[in-house]
Length: 452
Image (spheres, rainbow, N blue to C red):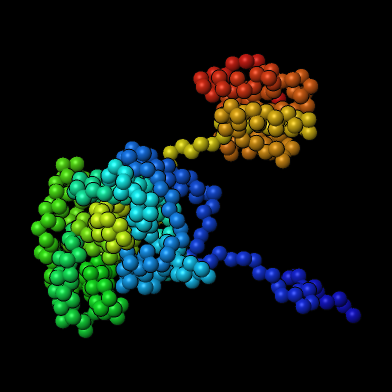
């Protein structure tokens, strides 16, 4: 009888289920080495601005009591009602992976008695946030934000400086032409009266509203103003204007912010429909968009504003505060979409090649000497062929390759090849570090010419 063909796939062992490789969770991503230069560029730029503007870095807890976010962000917001990763811990009650960082900054301000520090306290942060929303471009369930917060001062110059910082930060990244949208939403008291008028207006148009907007009308009516729904955008044109309901102090504050921006020559657009989505905001609010905001556009690159009542709401003393945050993934998407060339990254300056076991031992020792001396060195110690190693050196883009073979081991020498000119020279092995430092410093190329 002919032999049956064996199955291409290996047979399962009797009684054992087939093993399945672990998969990434929906909405979570690994940040691979190919993307790390973008992440370093954004973070290094942010840290440079933090230092330049006097913001100190704070590392915030990733896991917090759920009540921190429900009290600060608002129970009726989409974040709290739909998107938070919340679970019950055996001993600590209801806990939540942080969906944003401002509430955590306010909690840290109270927890660590920062009220006793010179005010304003200026803090910078960077890290992952978590929201269980529908994953799409620029929106993941684990995402990263960087942010700047100034706590303890209500002067409008703080608002203006934060907007200035944001504007200059994006310019430094290479993202020119960004659009800053700005508005004032006044105090909670003034907003309360305005919301009554707004609800009355939209209730008269309720039949025209989509289901989701009807839900917002009952739970969070201010969000009708910045809705992306075309029907809602058409209706809001005749809705009561929030600016008409601002208290005098908020109007004065906002006008001073605008005066600073005009004096600083910062381009901005007054957007009467900008309200932001979180309950803790007061007075100035702003967002940063890649360009002129288009109807139906999904993602701002960042946003923020004042939250003068948040610290008191969480149990601290009355403390004015303002800040903004930016989405790192969204920034990187813009850098890629615009083809922004990143500044030169730190790469290998020389490459160390070896031929034979004895040479490999000498090369490993030399590598440590070069590294200790601060010379970035590439290598392929696991490879034996010189051709393969020279190809690797070419990929590194180095100018100099250091070659050690059996002859060099016996003679106590090393061969230096200039990859650009092809010139090679032999030097004393013990002088390698000093000679390479000299070449990298002045680009000289002298010595005995030799053929390989």
